[in-house]
Picture 1 (spheres, rainbow, N blue to C red):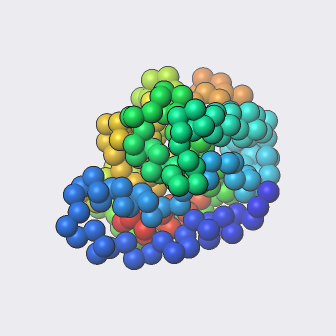
Picture 2 (cartoon, rainbow, N blue to C red):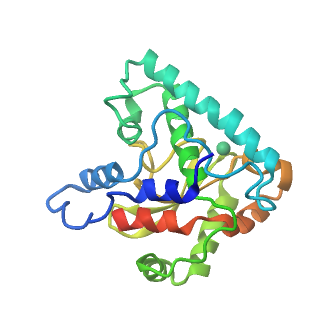
Length: 244
Ligand SMILES: [Fe+2]
């Protein structure tokens, strides 16, 4: 286990001052540049920044343990297998770079590179007890683009309810610099060149059944609603300060 404040700090270090460096870039180049400046995990799993039971009663100990040690561990293992088979040098290629060119690789690479990145981000976006809603430029942007925090949360939860089968819901900064809620199937994400809507991810929730079924069974809406109580807004804010 590692200290969550250190994890948050690691995500935020050196990530300020994004504005101004993108003048003259195309929208695609802009999104690539923004995402390159966000924290990118290695291809190994980062230690979970809290104990297995630390998110109870929102997410139970057994779900966290199986999710991290079985599901997420398999994505990390399998993406490295795919990289070896497809001649991707992890020392020279960051995972954000890999995701940004994912269409030229196999479905094994796509599923597992996405799965690894998505879960590494998801763990960092939660903390025991959560944070208060951010009083910052992020709140101003949420109010500007959604009308209110409640309206944003409704849009986010509605996208989670509407995702058929397995997938993720994201709050992104899109190519126009606005906040937007999007959903991706399976282990896809908005960094991928094949994504319907590309963007820089700020917040993400896993709506695969393995993320909630032991506690919530078929009640995905309850998981979505309760999840706000463990959101680590300080990490979301740090990410927004890079790309907002
Ligand atoms: Fe998951």
